Amino acid sequence: MSRKKGRLFVISGPSGTGKGTVCAELLKDIGNEFSVSMTTRAPREGEVHGKDYFFVSRDEFIANIEAGNFLEHASVFDNLYGTPKDMVLNRLERGYNVILDIDVQGGLQVKKSHPEAVLIFILPPSLAELRRRLEGRGTEDAEKIEKRLGQALNEIKLIGEYDYYIVNSDIDEAAALARSIMAAEAAKVPESVRPIIREYEKETK
Ligand code: 5GP
Image (cartoon, rainbow, N blue to C red; front, side, top):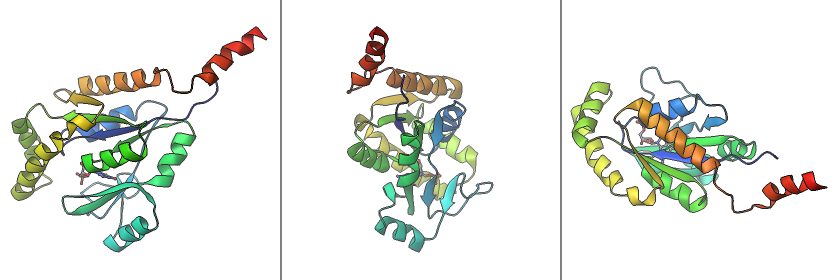
């Protein structure tokens, strides 16, 4: 069959739900690529420029907004985050599935501009468990953790805008469910069925 365009997957959910780990699991599969975001947040220990994020100044970020370089962008916890547009569209065109790990505001913007995108929401088993995970991560102080928990509930309230949800109690099960969702999406009958029919017609000629 002729090569198809890739699919765009958005993975959102409160900070600390294990979105990043689910994405890392999906990236082990051939054909899936991750979109590296741009951010004004300072790098955490071990984070690499160009791999985890493109770390830029606020001025540079704003220049990119003005140049129309983002597929979506949002302010999250006082920092700016955005998805570079060209990189994503390029990869989709080349037939790769692109995975965006972005917040809900960004997810809704992508849904508007790309209604065919598949939106997956990752939930923590409970807010108490989320608090334990954030505390265990040790990257945020107490005040920031409280802010992130408050934000978590606000994000969960928007789950109705998403196509699928996964409760991440166990990372292997969560990744397996995400893979199943991606596989089911790949098996969906597309809007334009003509190319499929043409493949079989060819054999009758
Ligand atoms: P962190 O600072 O912990 O890496 O990410 C904070 C939040 O920003 C996470 O929910 C993450 O998914 C979100 N985020 C990361 N990159 C982007 C992006 O490009 N756009 C949007 N809207 N959110 C992002």
